[in-house]
Length: 170
Image (cartoon, rainbow, N blue to C red; front, side, top):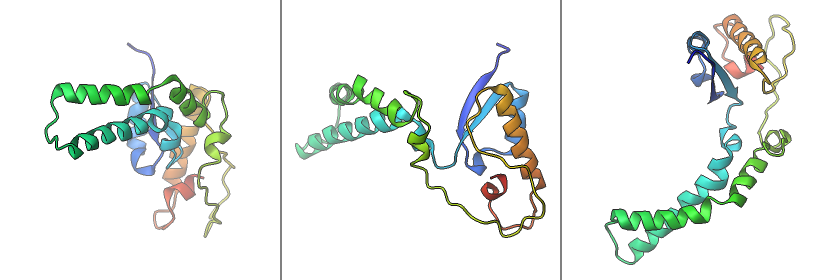
């Protein structure tokens, strides 16, 4: 109670409005926006464990359907799910997921190298702004500084511009 909370969200512009950021600040919520279109790379258990779990459970249900089982009782569900769970949620898969996401050992390039970054020359630059390099904030002060800079750039963007918000922020 009274402490800070960390909320990690996809950095897509539709998920991170100024109003939402202000509400988070008011409620002591530190908002951390992941780079757009990177959440699948940064969620180690989704890729390494839950995706195989979904596939293995689906295979079990398909096997039941091939054997003309059209109703799955709770008992059958639990047996099929338990088998799929035990095959998918393993120490090896968990470790591989964290390694693939660059979390353990810490290796940001493991994810950054998989991102499709498109470098574009801006159509028009009305004024020079300070260079900003996207990086994950290491503490609350850096989160606040990054959020402030993004808010300023959003507020100062030309209203008639057809350029995306991402181009203006970066």
